[in-house]
Structures are given as structure tokens and as C-alpha cells.
Image 1 (cartoon, rainbow, N blue to C red):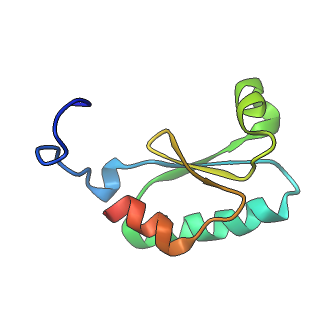
Image 2 (cartoon, helix red, strand yellow):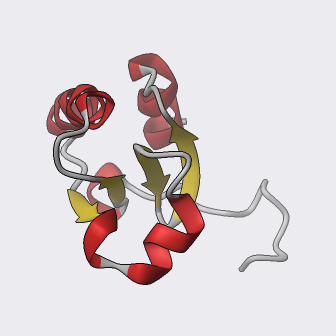
Image 3 (cartoon, helix red, strand yellow):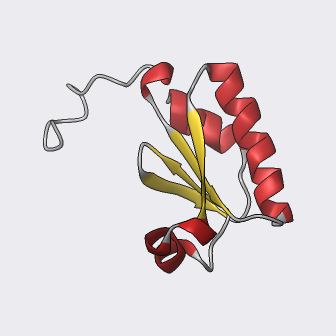
Length: 93
């Protein structure tokens, strides 16, 4: 399906999506990002999870200078600041 024309791909329903917030304890930007993720995902019925960068060496190596990082379906969506309308569009558009 990855090489299928976008015209023929079905869009995933919101409940079939997954948002991941990569964060660390004591990070005020992470707290701000979490508030946006909770609001948008709650409004749309999208499941979300958070991962602690201090507990995962792979995440630490990949994202340390960018946290908080938001992934949508495993792909990086944004980092540092989360824009509510942009995240909402990524999950519905």
C-alpha cells in the first residue's frame, strides 16, 4: 500500500491512529505539549501514549535535542512546540 497512489489509499479513522509524545520529566515544554496532545486526541478519539526519553536509549539518541517530540503513527510530526490546529489537521486530513 505504501507505493499505491494517494487517490486510492483509505484514510485511517481517528481511532486507528496513534500519537506518541516523547518527553522527559521536569520539562515544561513537554507539559505544554502534553496538554495539546490530550486535548486534540480527546476531541478526536485518537489514542495517544507517552514515552520517557530518559528510559529508552534509542529515543534518547534520536530525539534528545528536540524534545518534546510528537509522532503520528510512528513518524515525526513536530518537536518543541505543538500547534493544536496542525496536529488536528494531521489526524483528520
